[in-house]
Length: 286
Image (cartoon, rainbow, N blue to C red; front, side, top):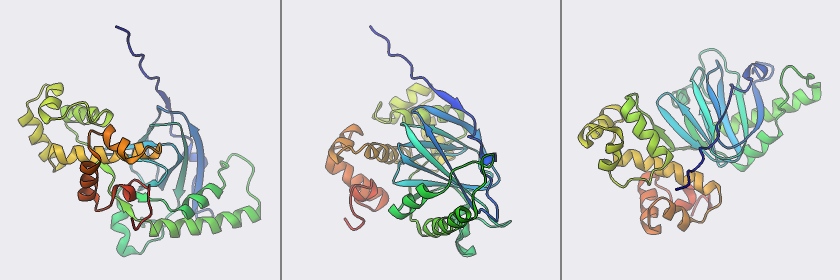
C-alpha cells in the first residue's frame, strides 16, 4: 500500500518586526511577506498592537488559548504583548500592520469606553476600502532608504484612514478556543486538522485514550462548552477557509458533512447571518 508523503513544513522567525517599529511620527507601519503554504512563523510577541491581513490566501493564527482562521475577507487584531504563531494554510500574501498607541491605551483610535473589547484578539470584517488602503501603505523596513517628506505625509493620511476603518469594522465570531490540558489539546488539534474524521465524541475520545465522560468534563471545565458546540466553531472556521477558495456553497456544506439546508440552518443559528453573508459570498443584506 503506497504511503502518503508528509507535508514539508518551513519554519521562519518573527519576520523582523524590529525593522517596522511604529512611533508617534509613523503611527501605523506596514509589512509585506509572500509565504508559501505550510510555512509557520514561530511564536513571538511585541509591545505594540498588530493587525494581520492576508490579502490573498488563508492563514491560521494561534495564541495561548485560541486559534483563528483568517481569510482575505477578515483581519485579526492582536493586542500588545500577546504571544502568537502563524501558519499559512495556503500560499498567502501576508500584510501586517503595527500600531503606535499612547501608554495605557488599547484599540485603533476608539473611545476609551470601547477599549475593553480591544484588549483581546478579535476577528474583524475587512471592507474593500480598508483592503485597498492597506495595499497602498509603504512596506520598506527601517534599514532601507528613508521616506521622502511627501511619502511620509501620504503614509500619515493612509494611516488615519486605516485607524478609522478599523474602529468601524464589525467583529466576527470566528475564534476557536483551545485548552491547556494536554489530552484535550491533542484532541482539539486533531479536530482542527480534520473535523469530519469522526462523527461522535466517543470516536474522538478513543484517539486520546480517555473516556468520553472524561473528555466531556474537560470541555466543560476548560472551554465552558460542550464538544458539539466547540466543534461547530471549528466547522465555521473551516467553512470560511473553503469559501476563500471560491467553492460553491453546496460543495462547502458537503465537504463539512452537511446537507445544504442543514448547513444553512447551523450557520444562521450560530452567527445570526445567512451562509452567503457570513462567508463573504453575498451582499450584507442577503
